[in-house]
Image (cartoon, rainbow, N blue to C red):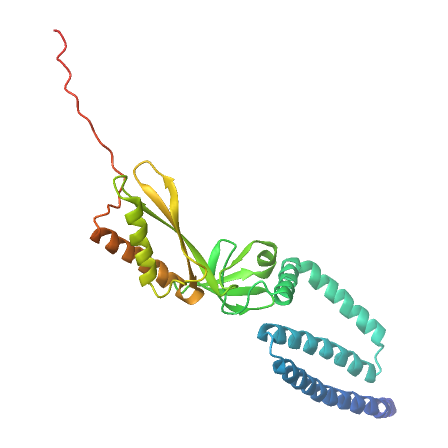
Length: 277
């Protein structure tokens, strides 16, 4: 019975000795959480005030800041409890190394995400072609980028591969150039054909007058004279312009009796004299 009383007494003394540290640790934890939330709110507000602020960069910076401050807060709480922080930091470092070795691919994607966010080869809403896929950028995460294709399919591309490959950004410039080819028959009048094509360009409101459109002969092909047409349009009007130009070119060339040839083969049959029997 005396032994039990001694154990209870020692346990009570230990709890009384530990209580100030526990109160200190809880106080640090509560204050730390409040400070982290305030810093997030304050920095986010300051970044949003900047006219050139990127929402993706703001979100990324907030996540990095939050996790960094949480790690510092945990170390401070552990120290307040009387635990040796150097050993705790060593454990965290060893755990981080083990996780890093097991997640090399994810770390590559993380680094790629950082490069994409910093150098901005594309932004949300841009139409890009990368890794053999094309679509509108709808989301830029730390590990992957999300594309929405013209056929309403969602594609996730790892940022590691994306940052190390070729990226074609069709939305980077406000206007876009189209390189079109129209073929007419060899018996067509070249000057008349140019006038018809110029009329088609003039009647299309989506084709820009500056830069000036260009009409010239591209090549004398096997069965047609191919005209090369350079026209410019705004990004949002580009695909409609392509469709309208091809449709109107066919209509106007048909009106003028100018033939658009198609591949054909002439077959010549020759009657041979019968063989001598």
